[in-house]
Image (cartoon, rainbow, N blue to C red; front, top):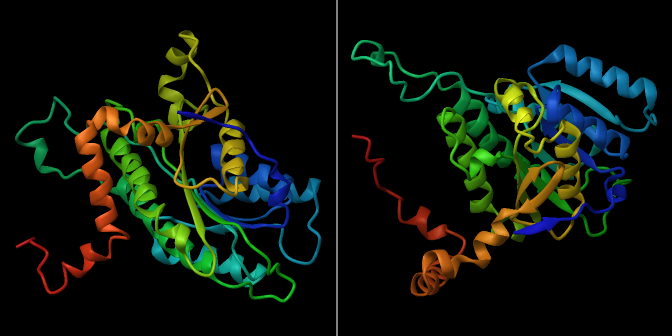
Length: 320
């Protein structure tokens, strides 16, 4: 597992950044950190009041330069495809390009999926799917749309035309790779986010005209609203704690690290390690040497995955 060393954030000055979940917690800390670093930040959230207050506070202390917006809030429900489009449209129409896209928005879960108190009567009530709509479907919408806007040539003549670094950062969780009893659907969505990054890291990097890097962030305990239920026990046991700004700095560092692609950074106590590196380097040990060799060969045969889709043409869904 490789330790992630924060790079110089000077490269983010003037970059156009689109992010979701920017009103509170990690997202708000990231909005402020990027704005102070000189980036142009367009952020979305469903919480309008804290978002407006954040914009007013930042612009009053560091006024915009008058050329293009330095910061803008667009009300965004990430489970709405149209809202995601509107957020990217705002950045592209005002600045002529999008350089980095970060998906932070997520919600928690209440109650267990397989609650022991369920009966033959209560099991007839279906589970709410909002957490899947926000934490996984919304991230899929965001990533799909981001991949198109990041590929676009700069619209304005004043935009840079040299080699441009483009990236997507998806915020998963330690629940994306470690079992987390009691938050089953939340964990399933965060596994999905990590899987989304893994499935795209070898194809987006070959995008034309601009390669697109994609990485995931997997914070452990962070002092946000989602962690209130376990906060007292966590502190009582002297376990490592992230503040929102700690995670925000790692996300910004991931954006600035122009060679980082396909990483999943586990963030704890304000530091980060790439868990994907350990998984890849030790595959022959945990999978077995023979299976490892076959896996490498099989992955090469599958290539960019086009054969999966061509094989499904003309076939039904299997849903009956």
